[in-house]
Length: 124
Image (cartoon, rainbow, N blue to C red; front, side, top):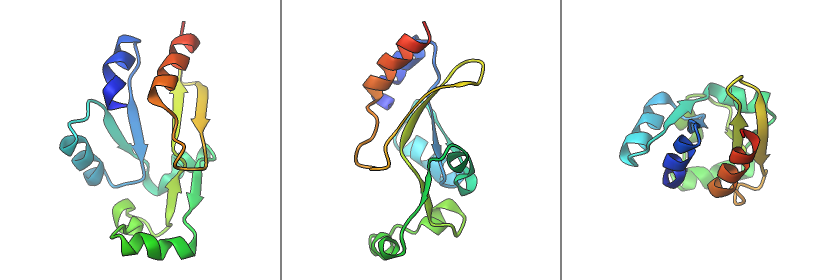
């Protein structure tokens, strides 16, 4: 998204990311990667859940995460062991959701360039 952030802005759009991580971790991510957009915190993945885009990490996978030093409860500030399904959501200026591109397979993330092209078609 960072690479196309200027193009999204030129199209009259604002890019934001939503993460269950704590506000402090999100700010650290923005600053350490020199991001030109904000990462908003979604405590408990509540917004992702409301959109049907939250899943619980299976018990057998939790130990793998911990083995890699990934402590979701510590990062997210809750004990839920939930993650959002990666998605690009296009929201109109009136607050209505125009499009959601999501795939439960986290390795198949929506391409920012495809989202930009769709956005240009939707907001003409």
